[in-house]
Length: 318
Image (cartoon, rainbow, N blue to C red; front, side, top):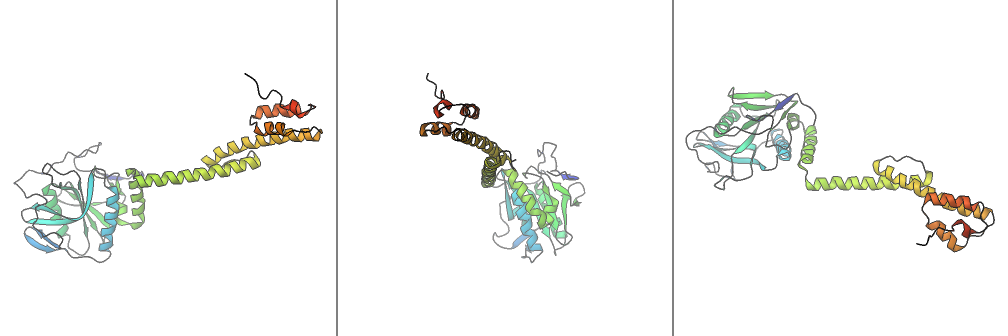
């Protein structure tokens, strides 16, 4: 991974990345899944006030897509991503973050757990609305809340220390136990960077289909390289391979080429001296792939009176 000047770690997370933050104590709250807002509608509640979550035009709508595309690929094993998932933060508030990440394992009661990361996309709405939502989520126990400002092309994170938004540098990365690898801020803002970030995240996840495709591609490349290398080795003997598989194939091709040349040399020497080569002897020469033995036979062929003398002793009795 490229080194970044800014690494944004989870609150309470040390070098090991282990989270030690716990939700603040307080009076009993409804469960996060206890609904105040009717599901599958655009109605939400903030401090008892009914709010209508309007649909969006570009670039707000496309930013939603880019966020879920990149975030979904980065979600680590054991966690689940969600879009527009309602969360009951207190008695009078029940609303959905634009995207969130929560632990996949249910709680002891078998109900879904509170999200650990939440993301809001802000365009035309006043920043006061995301601010109100962030304070409610943090008070409920959500570890980290982010806001993407579409027009300004900026990402901010809620700060407990200042009780306000903290702008994040564009070259920063978000590092968190919920993520399989650090998520570049640039990937949330630029579509040209999002594909690279997603590809790297999927590689880190070792997705079986992707692993199989990479292995298949490597095997095909190696096979093609070996075939080309073997052909060049037989044709030229000393040609160099262009790839790992090609180099291995070329070595084998060179060896086979030398064997064939040695076999032909024996027959040529016998023929030039007028010594007939019976079919049995020709088969023995063609079936021998011991280059050292073939070279000895070449020397014999230069003085032998019969072809049988050349291969004499090639089959030793035990």
